[in-house]
Image (spheres, rainbow, N blue to C red):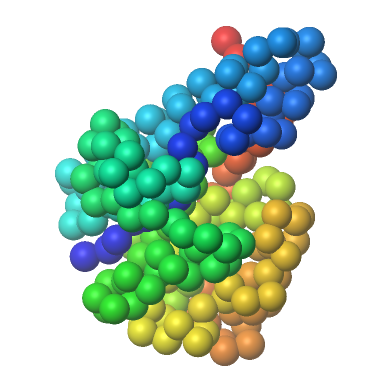
Length: 213
């Protein structure tokens, strides 16, 4: 069984989608840009949860909601609202630390893991199915993002047992070379790696334009 972890920040004004909120304020002069950005984040999270629920119903997969911005009880309630019953907190630290914390659950259970975020309007079941299939034959599966990062991280059955080789240390998180640095970190221990299709994270107003009807 593969565990799929959805890394999600609680959508609240001023605490999520800050770059998008800033863009909406400057580009459109919206006085409620923070609330508008929060509603967009909420819809993206609902879309992500729907795709994951549908896939979990069709495949042997355990969905997990990893929450940032809420306490345990509120996080559990949010997970129930989204139809994702298994809920964990992300905890403190930079992205690499929080990713490692979630992957350690797979390590303890010897279970391959996929990790995704909630910034993907293009998220679809076919991409996730392809990633699961790749995990059967590769240590590492990545989904490139157009900003130089990645939207999906997959750790296969062999690599999940070797956390010392996870390519999460020394990565310039948030910069344009995250994918490149991760692939370089994977080369050193000679991990087998493959990619699924590139997708676009929704972080800025320019990312939102293609989705306007």
